[in-house]
Each structure stands twice: as structure tokens, then as C-alpha cells.
Length: 533
Image (cartoon, rainbow, N blue to C red; front, top):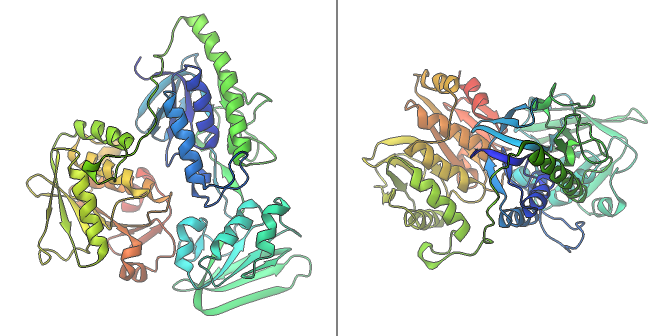
């Protein structure tokens, strides 16, 4: 019964986190599954000013607090991708890439992902001038011209954010005005570095090493405008979102756009399965409506699960409330919270082999930061040791930490820069995969990995602020940890300008295979294997 829960919440955004707070507080055992990063889309929003009761915050801080609340009541959290569902019985099964989990009730809060527009050149230039995340990629266009395609909340808010980097921003709106609230649109309309063009659509972009040509059209007059420049520019697309319901087709009722059909209580077409947040049909997709959905669905699930308890006599183990997170102690130089240390202790205790973290340093301050970070990390476990390598011993880009076995044998995993921010978890999981037993991989996938015999080098170019990067990093490291012919080296692109220029990186994450094949965007293990094949 270890993997039996009262409710499994699929999706760790505001809707799922709110439901976890309500359910755990009501003494139900709840598991929140999230395949990328807890917090959802709002976690990459740099400024939130319209959430009631909070004057001003950022998306990550807001959702971090939600997660802490849920954890304090005993909710459990797991980074795993839901790959399939069996809702045919009273005890339901959620299949994930980390095993199967059973429950009485399910809340689907999978959210949505950025939608493409379809103008000519959009697909071909993804990561090469066309971007979808201002927080992740805005800095790549410092001092450059930027176009924004879209007229909703995201387009208005992110255009203002992009002015921190861009020389000028031009917003192309398909309709005759912004579709968001006037209070959100006004800062964009009145910004000295922003031009707003209404009734205008992007038709085409092109360029050799980045975008140098754009053509857009006024839908009222038919007039076309060509923007051409010797220097490259960027196009950010904020055209709404598509629901993340691929794994739910044929399982529950969806509308023609793929959104989940629910009733007034957030109940889906399947008994005991509810949905909340951006994945539902609704007129307004905001944090406040997502949290409202989550609260309503949770209270309905409480009633449903209680009825199942009475009917079957079965119960999941009750949740164990946790103390709220605290700050760190002096022995790790203030780098890790008590909560993080507890999680690391569990992970390090499971490692089968000791690891040597070999440091390659240069004279830049970032090398000192890396050395201090690794020194603090190895204090936490006798499974880890560290040493500084001779600067002449390798042509490795410094600063770098290579993950080696205790005898110095390289595992193929390395991080260039300091593995903090969103890459901290992926780096630690890399250690776990290198030392064994590592994250579970199904038999067929493992066989495909081990069957590859050609030497293969994977470079993963990231930024620490990117929420899309860790998914690719973790999957690439899993592959390299299994196959000794494959390496996975991660680079914080901010410290390696030569690589950025060499591969013309204008978006992250960027995967470079054998210094030839380049692919942009987040990927799971199966997608990487397809590229390697």
C-alpha cells in the first residue's frame, strides 16, 4: 500500500498546489506529480501584482510559498511525468516514468504550453531568433530590435519585461486592441521603447545566422511591411497556450481544442476524476482562477474519497505533517536550507558508489564560486570527495566540475559553471544516476541506450533562470550515466561566450550532438534518443 494515495494531483502549478493544501489539511494522503518544475507557467513570470492580498511578488516566490504550505500539511511531491492513466476501477492507476501509483481520486491540473502561430519560418528558426519565453531568452537580444507576436496578458506584460534588454520592442496584435485588461495593456501602450501595431500579423521571418528579415501585414489595408537589418533581431511569440492533454485522449472527454470538459464542480466525464486550472474550458486563465478551481475540486474530492473509504473499507496511510522550511546552518556556508539538506541526505544515502568531483578552474571569479559550492556540497556526505585538477591536465572549458568514480574514472557527466538555480536539482540527480542505482528506466529504453556504441558527445547549453532546461539536462545525464560511450556536459551559457557564438545560440535549452547536430527546446529521454539515433 506504499504507493496508494487518497488523491493524486497531476500538475504542480497553482491549481494543483492549492488542491494539495486543501486535501492535505483535511488529512488526506495526497501526491503531487510534476514533470518539469513545481510552480507551472507562472513560475517564469517576473512580476505578479494582481493576486489578491499580495501587493507585489514574482511567480516563483508565490508558488514556492504554496508548495511550502502543502508540504507543511503533509502533501508529498514527486518530479515524474504521467505517461498513462487507468480510470476503469475504483482504485485508479497513474502510470509515470518513475513507476505506477494508485489512488482513489485524481485531479488533473496539467496546464498548457505555449502555442505556435504558424507564420513562415517560425518552426525553422525556433531557438535561432524565434523564442517563447522572455525570462529564458530575453537576455540573448540585449541591444537588439525585438518583435512580439500576440495581444493578450503575456504579450503585454512580457513586452515591458523585454525592454530591459531590447533596444526597441514592436508588438504585432492580430485584433484592433489588446485582449487583456486595460490596466495590463497600458504600461505597454505608454512605454517609450514599445510600438504597438494593431490589425497586424507576422507573415514570414528568415535569416542565415539568426533573423535578419521579417515581413508582416496589416489585415485591414492589406499593406505589407518588410523589416530588414544587417544585425540580427528577435521574435517572441505569446499567442496563448495549448492544453497539455495528449495522454488523456480517449480517457476522458475533451473538447475540439483539447481542453478538459468539466461540470460546475470541476468533475470530468469519469467518476472520481476532476480537473482544474488552465487545462479546463474557461473564459479567464489567471493564477486566481486556477487556485479557485483547485480549491473547489479538492473539496469535491474530499467528499468522493470519504465515500470510497466507507464503501471499500480501504484507506491510504495518513499524511505526516512536516515542519516548515528553515534556513541553513554554518557548516555548509549558508548554501542549503534544512529542507534541502534533508532531501539530499535521503538521496546520498541511496547512492551505491562513492564519487569524486574533479574541478577544473581558471582565474575568473566564477571559478571561486564553483569551488565554494562543491566544497559545501561534499561536506554533506561521505559519498562525495573533491579535488582540483591540474589546469594543464585537460582542455576542458573551465570552470568545470567533472563527475568521476572514486578511482577517477569519468562518468561522462560534467557541469561548466556553477550548478545552481534551476540546475541544482538536475545536477544532484546526475550524481545519483552516476553513482547508482539512479532513476528508473524501463527495459526497452535502457536497451536502446546500451545498444549505442559510437562515441557521442552531448553539449547542453542552458541558463540558470530557464525553467525549460532541467528536463533536457536530466534526460541527457540519464543516458550518459548508462552508456560509457556517451557524454553529457552542461554549460551555463553566460560564462561561455565562445560556445554561444559558435553555435549561434539565441534560445535555451540548446542540445549540440557531436558539435554538428543542433536542437533547441526541452526534450524528454525518448526524444533525445531519437536525435541520437
